[in-house]
Each structure stands twice: as structure tokens, then as C-alpha cells.
Image (cartoon, rainbow, N blue to C red; front, side, top):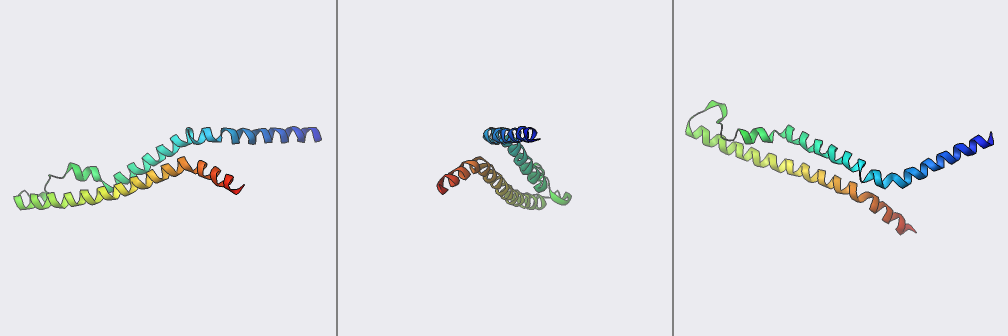
Length: 119
């Protein structure tokens, strides 16, 4: 009975040691790829919800089917303002995604630094 528990404990400690040693490799390879893919999907979803590409494609199309010059001018400027504000909102989300990316890269280093400061 004691021999089996010693073998089990040694396997558990070996597994924990392996996880600790390989953690940085996972964090900066597969983990980084996963977070980049997730952030790219996040930004793509925000762009889709803002429909920025649709607004850009239709910037010269008159709204409400008005084909006169006044309708075309008003439609152009309304869409231009929409494109500017929607671009600023998308820029905000891109900055948030970049902050999360940098936090992902720097957090293990900062954690190790804080642990070393405690000693």
C-alpha cells in the first residue's frame, strides 16, 4: 500500500514539475496563438456589429433613393460622419485588444518580478 502511494506521489510531483517547466513555452506559443486568434475574432465581431465596411461601400449612394443633388450631398456628409464615429469606436476596441495582448505578454514577467521583490 505504501509503495503504491509513493509511486503515485512521485508521478504527481513529476507532472507538476513538468507543468511548471513547460508553462512558459505554452504561454508564449500555443497560448499566445490562442489569444491572438480570440482577439482577432473579437475585433472582427466589433467591426461587423458597427458595419463599417457597409458604410464605406455605400458612401456615394444617396439615402432614401433621393437622386437630386441636395439629397446626394446630405447623404454623403451623413455617411461621412457615421464612418468617422464608427471608425473611432472601432479604434477604441482595437486599442483594448492591443492592451489585452500586451498584458498577456507581460503578465508572467511582472508576476515573477513581483515574487522576486517579496524575497
